[in-house]
Each structure stands twice: as structure tokens, then as C-alpha cells.
Amino acid sequence: IIKEQPYEKPLSAGTWRYERDGRPTGAVEHWRLTEAADGYRFLRVDLDARAAESGQTTLYHALLNGDGRIERLKYRFWGGGLRVSGNVLLDDAAVIASREVNGVSQSEVLEMPAGYGFWFPSAEGLGLAALLPGDATIPAATLNSDVGGADTLAVRRVE
Image (cartoon, rainbow, N blue to C red; front, side, top):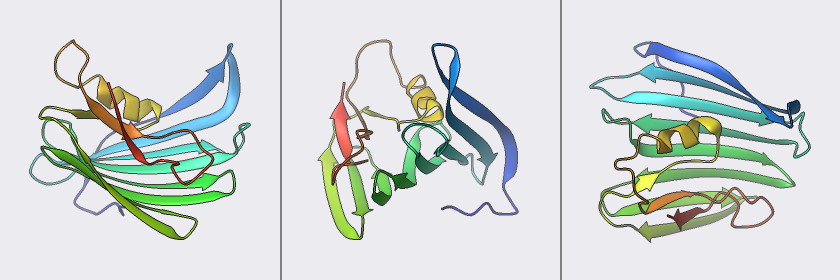
């Protein structure tokens, strides 16, 4: 989605294997973090569940600022008869999102209060939620991970 460039410096990479009751589900998440320019980093996540019950695959590519917060997220999803691609831009007061679900374009703006958080539905994406400020509940936005319709991976507000 965001092609890795020669100037990017590899920082870390890994694999998460999803399990239920101590048994592999068939879902595996590969991730890679690289350093770009001016303190920015790219986090690329491949959540491959083709061998799992869901048969889904999702790619997430996030641009992280110097504070480790997401400024932009691009994603692609395949599974359950759906093909979804999306782009999410985060600014101080809103989440601006556009998606294409099986060829139908959609866009939305989700107004958010100052200091809101954002995460996306994967182990690495949820790990970014741990970096959110404070120890109290805060407003946040994420992507709808309930697969099955036009709102698949739509942005939504959570606490």
C-alpha cells in the first residue's frame, strides 16, 4: 500500500500468532516498523487469517509521527465476499475517512475532541492504544471490525 523506500531504516519486525485456548487459530500477523525522515515512522501490518475460520486478510500501513501517534492509515481487506480499501487521516479535531467497499465509494468525517486516541483492529494496532496519554478513559476512534456489510472497517467512536 505504501511502498517501502530505500531511505527507510528498519527498526523492528515480528510475528504474532493468534491462539484460542492454547491452540493456533490459523491467523498470523506480520509487522514491520521502519524509520523515515524527520522522526516519522511507518508501521506495516499484514493480518493474514486465510487459514483461519474467517478466511480474511487485512493489510494496514500507518504513518506515525515523532510521538508514535498515527497521522494516516491506509488499509485493504479481503474476505466474506467483501473487498475494502480505505484511507484515514487524523487531525487535531477530526478523523477524515474514505473507503471503497466492493467498488462503492464512501467518505465520512468524525468530529473528535482534542487529545482523542486512535487504534486499528490488530495486535499491533491495539498496541498503539497503550501509548495513548493518561490512565483514564479517553475518547478514541477505531475501525469497525464487524465484517459483513457496508460499514466494515468504517471509522467509529469508542471510549
